[in-house]
Image (cartoon, one colour):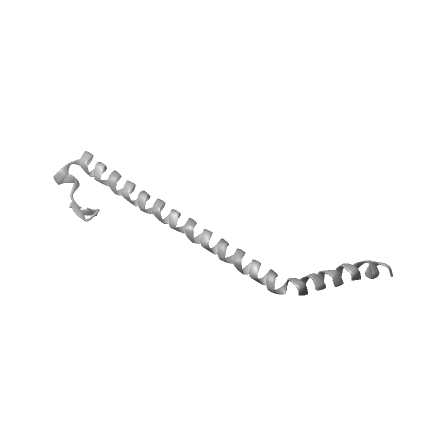
Length: 84
């Protein structure tokens, strides 16, 4: 006997066509459950992207002056490095 969505089935007792219909319904149910989880995963990825964006904005805002100073120093050092 097989259990499909909590129902005990026997191919001999209900016929092969009915067993195939029950199996098809079970597969459709499983596919629908997978589709629902994909939507949840997309929401989770969206939240992660938003959190990373907020962390980047806060970091650049807090360290903006220091980053600008560092890039200016590097930019000014590049021509003198190749002058030798």
